[in-house]
Amino acid sequence: MDLYSQKGKSIPQKIVIITLELLLLGFSYWILFKGGGGKLLGWFGMENVNGVWERKVIIFSFSVIVFLRMGFMMLYLLKRKIPWEESFSVPFAFALYYVGFSLLVLPAHQSIDYVDYLGMLLFLAGSFINTYSELQRHFWKKLPEHKGKLYTEGLFRYAMHINFFGDLLWVSAYAIITRNYYSVAIPLFLFCLFAFYNIPALDSYLKSRYGPQFDEYSARTKKFIPFIY
Image (cartoon, rainbow, N blue to C red; front, side, top):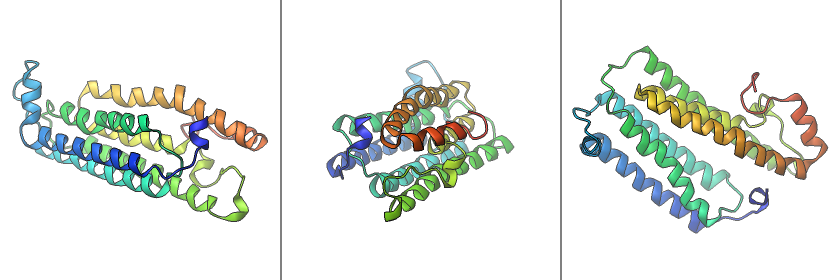
């Protein structure tokens, strides 16, 4: 996969991504707290969809945390080149989270209960797994003696793509908070994207770069979900 082998700072592309995601966050705020969601859903004949205040706060807090965390990872950890088309496709994907879940949470009228607390714990767990695994790999690869070696330690010993698993968890947490069955489509889509596109493509690149190291790692380690798949 040529994308993973190309190094570069891609500062203009990163600025575009951050700017577009800030605009999406602003749009999410308008949907959740300025009556924008009611207006949009009203076009589809849905009335009295102002949502529960606490749920809206949780959803927006999730989005702010995701924006800050992903911004840090992109600016500090991401070393590969970002193609211009990706600088627009990434914000488009995050629109599903920032905007999609903001709309999907509005019809819910249930008060916050233990299911939502479990959802918040799932969000924190997924965020931790995704970021901490990347940090572990980042600091390991900075050591000169590890040059040319495949990283298989830390959280990556439990799954070859444990960072993607973390993503799936925090996106699923969004869906739980919305209490909307339609929300299930978003983490399900993400799972399929990882399982049938990102992971096979990344595995192909890793195999071509690391050869026997990758084969040995793949033989003993689950692909995506620890202890399961």
